[in-house]
Amino acid sequence: MGFGYSTTVFGEIVFNTGMVGYTEALTDPSYNGQILTLTYPLVGNYGVPDPKITDEDGIPKFFESDKIQIRGLVVHELSLTASHWNLKMTLDEWMYNEKIPGISGIDTRALTKKLRTSGVMMAALVVSDSEIDVEKVKKELASTTHYNSEQFMDYVSTKQEKVFGNEKESVVVIDTGAKNAIIRNVRDLGYKVIVLPWDTSFEKIMSYNPKGVVLSSGPGDPEKCPATIDTAKKLIENNVPTLGICLGAQIIGLAGNTETYKLKYGHRGQNKPCVNLENNQVYVTSQNHGYGITPESLKNSEFELWFTNADDKTVEGIKHKKQNCVAVQFHPEASPGPYDCKFVFEKLKQLMEK
Image 1 (spheres, rainbow, N blue to C red):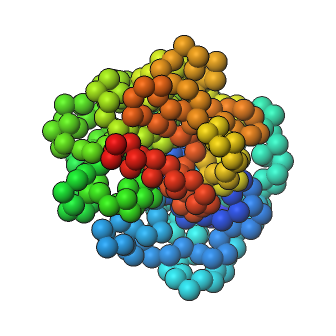
Image 2 (cartoon, rainbow, N blue to C red):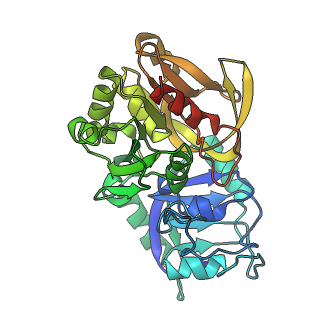
């Protein structure tokens, strides 16, 4: 059964194993260009809060950007009724308002098994009031631009600087598709946050005299961000305290001579176990990425391994061997959770206050 908005979309189909947090997931810019499958069987039962509710800095409290970022949504069962203390609308109403199509009644377990076996792939999602011409849709899908080739920065990055707070000391966030939670967490450290476009030069960044820089999360292939990679190289060379998150971690890795690759089906969920090699502690992390740092490339790079994935031994965190630069593949800002790794922001603060 179709829901949301009647339209046809094409995108890379992926799955997320999280049990809650569809509001945050749907507004996460890292999903731009993708059709999202939620594996939890019932979706929409707590509805959607009011997008106008913000914190004292004017940042939306319950959303990770100012719009739905996914191209389409696939669920097993859509809850048509919703109940929650801050409910503003149902999931169906929200998606209709934002012109995003959804489909329910899908065996999401079977679909997820297919994606795990064959890898993520391009897909079409059609919601229509009239009969659908399947052959026509198949032809359009075959000729559509592949996800790997898409340029996402024009859609997800800010066009001009944004400033949050008025403290004397500031942190610059390079926006390659930043979640609002990243800004919130840096604000919680006690710094003014200056959000800048993805291709901002090193010289422009340093004109703000920041205490440190965060390279944000975001969608797509990190190699499609050459300007950001160049900026990251200069940040490392000049020993500017820097934290990379998700896509930002891959960009920092490329700047320090590692290689990146596309994962077969990515890591998307809220229960991904990562081992901190500093203390051999396992942390439960929130993740959303389809690319990663090639483990073998670390040995000839400027970085050493910091976190590794307990499931598949992929690279989950790196530390520069000499400079004040760290990066994590998971989301320390979480949103919707878990919050086990917020200490990564404290690590940035330590580097800035050295």
